[in-house]
Length: 374
Image 1 (cartoon, rainbow, N blue to C red):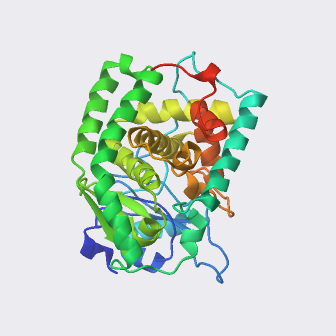
Image 2: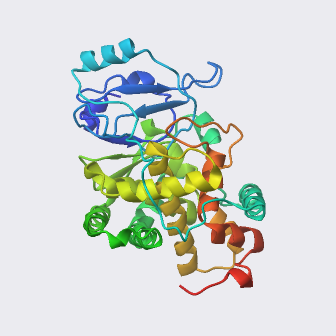
Image 3: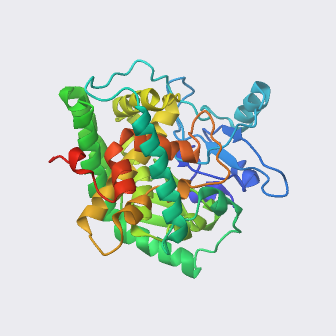
């Protein structure tokens, strides 16, 4: 597949996941530099992860990459080799990397570390999530299992069903993302800044114009956003098939919509920094730069899915329904890289940031002492 035929000529891409199509990606022209990330044995995959430039901007240490995704170690490539690729492509750009976010601040009222009881609650909640995934008829496929699947045609029954589900839920996801971003802005006291309020309104405006989910066989277990086409989210067919529940689909749609919301003007930079700083303190894991953006997208996805559950009650256990938002992270091959937390550490950070979510998973509802009106 020549990616230029699909309009992927300016490197304006956020892409999650595997690199089974390395040779195809080498066709990328324009402002694209490829950053190779870890590979497994040839018996399983030629490459486990590939990150592409997300914005077609001039080379600058302040620009940042891609999206949600494959969380695996880097295959180091020499500077000379990367320079060679950039010269051959006639490009100006850079691979995944984002400005440092160490100087951000957050409300002093927010907890800065986890107590022993809170850590135990988080680990118990992870057990609930991954146990429910195995028992749930609508449980999501873990990311590493998706990567091992053969490619799935666009018109396969699973892919068609997934695409229809995603398209049906897209309008719902748009509204839930807007509400979740506003809620986080209040929680982190960012709404007190006039400049952030303006950026947030622009971000929400970009979310509301997204209209289409596009299935793509070559994208496999990936989901991506091309900023020249901000009305469309591209979904790999394996990814569509691997998210059989509404809750899981809402979570992933919301993740992609946050990347669109941020746009090419870094509208949500302050929010990413604040979430990353808080998560770093709670987990003692470094969550800055691109990690902070990816985690914030996951956090909004979790919040959107939780709100969706509240708005659409049924007879399923609460813990089962809300666990679907993150079940795809219940992997056996739990590795991360400098731009992404490992899947299980992603769950861990999300639960640390959202103790009420952990309590609902473990107890089936908020303990009475923890309930409060909003």
